[in-house]
Image (tube, rainbow, N blue to C red; front, side):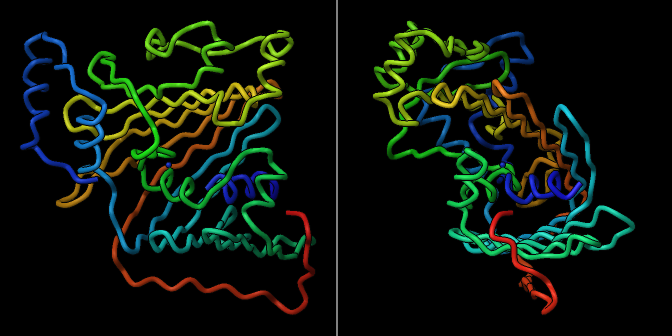
Length: 305
């Protein structure tokens, strides 16, 4: 159970306005007409008005980790200070805390209170990336927890905008080596396309040796056509032969914020698949939270999580 609980720690993605121009889209769909075409910049501009903005946020979540070998469920209290710290208290049994963790932009530390396995770990997010072979950043964890988009860089990323039913899809414009691997131009990639390559293909392996990670990455983001809230994200990573899908659902609308109460993160690779689901049962913003963390004197230090 402990290893699965750690997955939660290590994997750790809005203003609502009825007067946005997107209201015309709602009327169009009601009349059986398709959404209006919008540029990628126009979609991102409207999405940015839905960003979950906060200084402090606290939430109570119920979570589940699934993989090919095991399923585990637990509850956790999460506190965050924007761009500064994520504090997590995991209580899998009878409300008794088993793990407490603190993540900052460049570090992670946790204390395991599991009987017969009491220890602590102090390290960096870079170490975790090396161990898991998956890039883990503070910004990613923060975005997933509140339902904001992961890894959109509006200054560097270039997107094409498509319509997929009642949603807008932004598809990243990939680099020349991606086109050589797939044999398909990025303008011809459809929102629902599943992208994969034969890992033993000679041309792919030759290009792989000359490529960086970002050269073989395609990013897709689905936004609701009415209010531009983020619904789904898919990363097709042909460098590491894996796909990551983030789904958001059951949105809670308050006077000032919109956030997804349900989020699922699925990772599929040649080695198998894993899924992390969580549901927010309580959320409070801008309370001046504290982030207590102490290491008992009799706990041993582990150099590897």
